[in-house]
Length: 402
Image 1: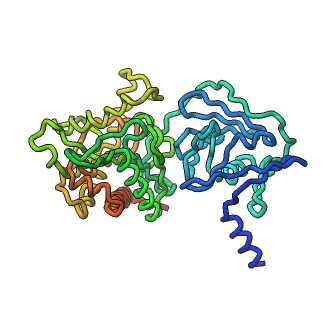
Image 2: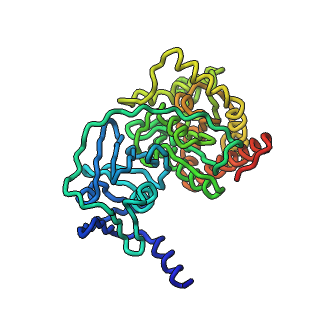
Image 3: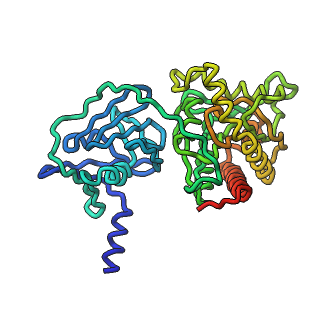
């Protein structure tokens, strides 16, 4: 009995190379595609047997109805909205050769969970069974109206009853390279690549500390600044951390020698240097062809300001802890905790910070930031600070995480 159970568990943990889809007496074999983040499957390949509709109303958003289950996915974002519930995914859906690919967990876990009376997955046989009749029609992309989005309420670390969830944002991406450097160098680094590499290592470091993580991007793709904070709200994040690389102002005296690390929280910029960094990081909005941000009317501004002020002290405290931990391993000088009006932080209703991990325009720091081992040290320092901050917050409120 125990041996049979162990075999069943082993089979359940193995991802097959193909999926058998059955409906009544009909069967179809659907191959899986191997990616660097695990197996993926084309949803369209389920259409001959499982009732499926896919609509693509706008930029990378897909509205899906499959076997009676309503699902929403976004290209390159690792979460799904299923039956009104937001579910983090191990990897992000993506489009290739005109097909929408989703992580294998969508068909092996999510569909059976939300449509258990119609769809079941047998891991021993790598078989997905639909209890209804086979559907001969193919997928058609149909128009769909934009659903009315509901704003998530601000979260409060320490008062929650769920596992800690950290939202990690890799700055820039896609057509937006961010800064490039070093000044006068014969080689070049791009901010978007450094931030993604550090964010991925921060993901690993936070998970090793028992936390759940949602990344705003997992690939080289552009995510609207306003949407990054909204993603954090959607998953009810406890903390939002945005990773960036600094760049010197070429008008400075000896700009190639500028170096150091600094951490920002959202508030009105108090210094000219903070305003410079604010302008630099907010320039990404020029690369956005569309955005789901709300109209910049006075009422919206007031609501945003009230929601952010609720977390002002916590964001400042988190920034100080990150700055202190970075000081244990960063070679450059500490440039301190600062405040500025970063657009990426505006819509994140939780303690939120933006970390400038060094100057990519400085040759020595560029080599440091481009080194995978040093990226891991940066990630570990930030993860330690986040863990320390949440422990402190919960002790202050007299609460402990489950």
